[in-house]
Image (cartoon, rainbow, N blue to C red):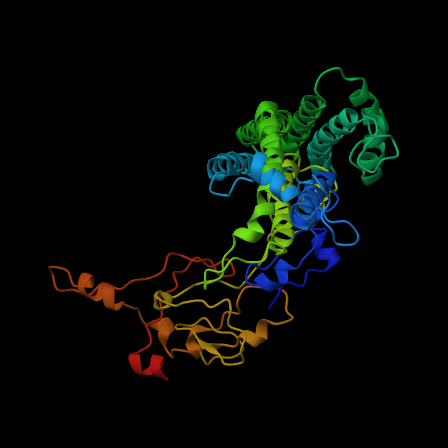
Length: 494
């Protein structure tokens, strides 16, 4: 089935142009994000097509005849003049030039894709560092508000990083303030994107704007200082020890340092694109090669021969259709490489930066405020049996037929079967554990020796040794729970 991604789902994706590679025919006629959408409004492409069409018409339709069909004296047709003085080269003559251009263009495309790929993963590393910091803070700080007071500075640092990249591009392109790709000044950005979502106070905005150094280092410093103050109170009021607090601060400081490193790496990738001489060489070669091919293709029509080796009519129109396709594909590759070098913006291939920011903000907010502590009293014990060894899972099984699972792990009854339909529409939860006695009567009072351990259970003295699970507390009890005997072959076949 082809992908049917809604707009709300697409807004959560960093790369919104998702596609199913198996739908090749459908993808072939897509307009958004295709090379045709990149080149359609490019004047260079239409100029080359117009040059070839003009040369083709002059070469094949200039006959030196007047309106009455009589030959004009001392007139030379365009075909005769070009064949005599500027004979159009064949594609075989242009093979070395086209080969060198294709090699350079592929290398240029690969370099641009490397920047595009590294930018994508580096953005996720920044988001992942913030999520790791939120995880460490949740495990060490008990107060939700104090957790948020520490993590929010890292979220502001992430947003400021993208503001710096976008504002630099807007300044270089001299975009007006009302342009959608211009994020505005730092004070405006912090007020609009950070203060409105309770990430920073107005006094902190004033300090950030007036800071002459890197705002990332300032924000990370605030986060570490706040964590030290919070953990100082935690040591006195909770069971957190001094060593645990010191380890938490050290771990959090390492995360802040890695966050700063990822931020600097992202900026450096944007500031060091493919060198301009190489970019200029590719652009010049693409225009020169396509211009020469436009002249060469005017002789393509009459040089094509059918199977009977008869020459086609010189008025053949094949080059008028082949050459524009060549222009669109060639310029489409170079234009795609140019767009991948700068993945920030509003183009079809640009990254959805809001997906990065929203993902980090929502998950950090959940880590700080959403309740999810372990229950104090839980009588349910997850005690698997060794008979489960060798069982398989099937995540794609959606039919109504139940799948068999060995041992005492069942759902929906004591038959030893799991019905996948019982999971539909329910929240993810651990499988319901049934009493082992419902599957194997009297198993609680007997010991189990698996087929693999029966040989080992007979020592040199000939005595049998029983195997038991480690002590598993159940309702505060520390008595060992013996393993249930494995089902027989007849029971498994049933």
